[in-house]
Image (cartoon, rainbow, N blue to C red):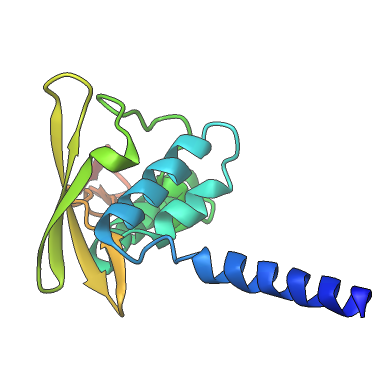
Length: 160
């Protein structure tokens, strides 16, 4: 009887711990916090870039894929889109606590407002895709592919 009680107690503990775990992208604030943590983690563990990439909007991921295609053309090797998130190149202008995040939600779009310890404020656009919140970075379009111009008998130049 005593071991049965122990098993029930352990089962309840497991159920409670599983029930308390909510997805990292359930709210806009959760998704932004998870993305920042993944980007910060990329300094010591570049594999976390993939997790950060997964938390980006489809539009942002497509932009990174176009950038990866240009990088692959220039480097002569395959470049994955998530590799365009350079480890250690990410830096926040200010630190913030998860409790300092507030979201303005309008349908499937949101803006997360992060407040720093002084007067710093940042607004991060978010979008809900397939029921999950994603960071929607507005990145400039990458330069187009390079082509050689000129003829074999004239000097050649690279052009876009």
